[in-house]
Image (cartoon, rainbow, N blue to C red):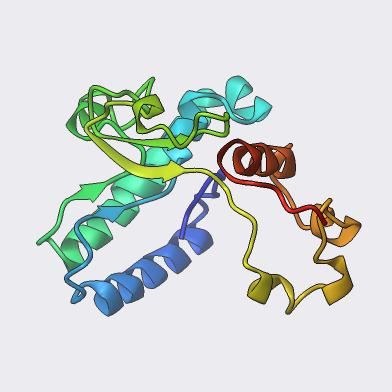
Length: 194
């Protein structure tokens, strides 16, 4: 529900979050595939690593807001509704080490504690030895092109070409993503002629 962004902590927003988190935990808690609850995806890392310039100028404000939303509200709601699973404020996170550091680690991507996210787009990305030896990699891999079946629903068949058509290039939002994917394919398979 919360990923890669800064969120407000005004009472109206927090009331809405309280309701939605309560509903979602009640809806999902009976699924045996849920091993733990995470309050957000990468927001601890975003604050620790200053993903956006405004964090640098108001870091204490954003840290307080983070604790208010993910610890004081969401954590309490989740543990009230389902105390059978652990709650992490964020993924990646250093787990108990993050708690010791007042809920925000200076390096949430540490290979020593907690979980890590790892994406690698270099030619040797398929070599498992390139991956970090972390406690747990909760996200890893590299981007792929969508399937032809998926693409054919949103672009003309004539645009399903290689080299990539403008319609395909426009759909890519990861900087240099098409080149990274093409290089990985070229390194490990044959590229299509057309």
